[in-house]
Length: 231
Image (cartoon, rainbow, N blue to C red; front, side, top):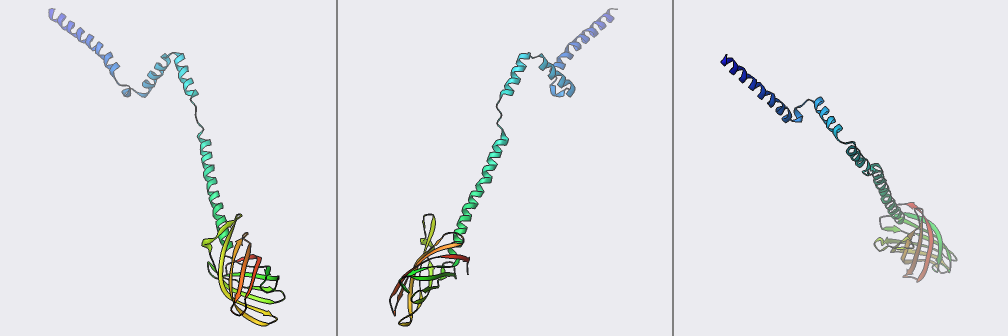
């Protein structure tokens, strides 16, 4: 009888210890080991236990945070990047246009002062045979008839801008022919002048001509030529 009491007393004491240790282990169990349904239930229960004022303050703080529109900033940056190459292409196009006009051949009309007569009608031309080398024949019609054929070199390196236009000087040597009262006359010709491209189609030209050797003749020819490309 005494043994059975001791047995039942020890058994009851062990049951009591196990009942106490089980809740402690349940509390110490990490949240990550719990099932997802139980974990979400515990979190929602903790949120519901918070006062309503704290929840409203948290939501209002989040709602009041300024949010910069990323789309407008991206649109402005893309528009800037899209506009920038167009300016570069425009500047390059102007340089290409100026280069074509400067190196192109042309034919035109003008007037000469002094070489064949006081004032003569002039047909001017330029035939580009290299980047900076050109043949510039011209015909002067007045009381006398003259043909000037100089070969010139363009000094592009010493070009300058005047009023937004590019002035390209040149100089050269050649021959001239004059049909006047004294008969036919061939002469050594020295020429110097400048081309001023006005546009892709037109070039203004001014040229001074000096005939030496047989006779001394001097005149200045000015005119406008129509560009027709390289020869």
